Length: 121
Image 1 (cartoon, rainbow, N blue to C red):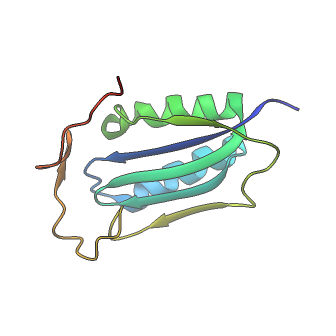
Image 2: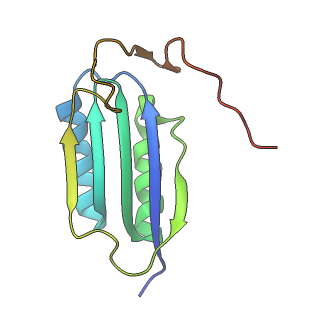
Image 3: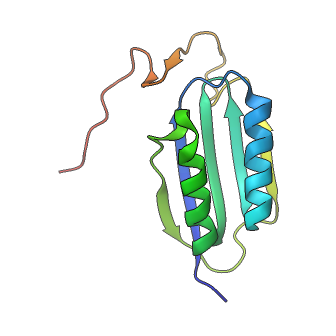
């Protein structure tokens, strides 16, 4: 059995057709045998997936090929066996539930008027 890993990620970016991205992600994940959860909204994408390390590397490469997802920061974590029972990809009004989807504005650089990303020292 190959080394199992989990990736966690999110990317605030405008998505004009969430259903097209859902179908792209569904096809990609199923072809690679990945399981987990992905949320897609007009504001971006958020996911946690588990599977073979080689499959996850292919997933990251293919996902970053989509122009809006190039700057997605994927976090890697150790895993043991199947971490997720199934694959669930959902479209929501908000990527992060603030209760007011029209209040958050995103562009190709992320959240408009958002904070500055700090690097650890």
